[in-house]
Length: 227
Image (cartoon, rainbow, N blue to C red; front, side):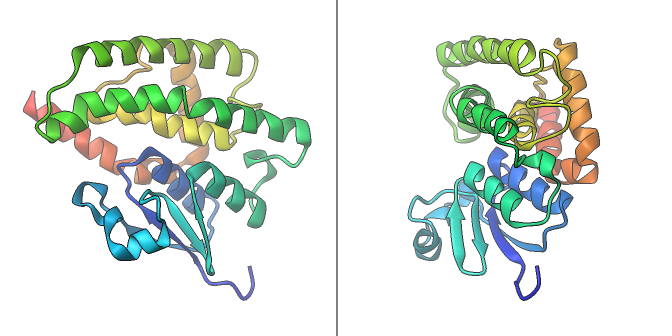
């Protein structure tokens, strides 16, 4: 867009929503710069970052002085402000509502359960805290129900979660479902329908997918080496 500087994204790529934002920026060739914020080092709690985002969370987007937090809001803002394909966040109300429907459901389903597995299996042991077997097993069961819903509702008659082309819903979902891969756990391995969906998403995103997930692949190798 003429006269505008590149947007600035504050990200930690171990964060699933941050990877979704980075993939969207890269894939759609939106001019951007990235400042990495290492949550594990407490960089989100510095005075400068707290001034930027008092909630002390990533991702954060700064678009020429307009500062926005929350990945869902950031992605929808980028999709409606910049010249990207309509399928990401369709203008047609019915199609857009389907993306909003998934996004609303996502945070307490796909994101919540996949994140719990990652925290219990990777982050807590890294911090010297033991895994809680009861919470871990419950998260696995809950995620299993979520995966059933993805297959039987969202992917029932279509190639992607909200239609015949990729949307923000697929981007949010795939980044979450990749997260347990940090410990080598492929939660889709026994689900051919979801494996096919993930393959379609990866193909649609091309290099931007693997670039953003390189940290996941690196953690998987380190985790496997310890076994």
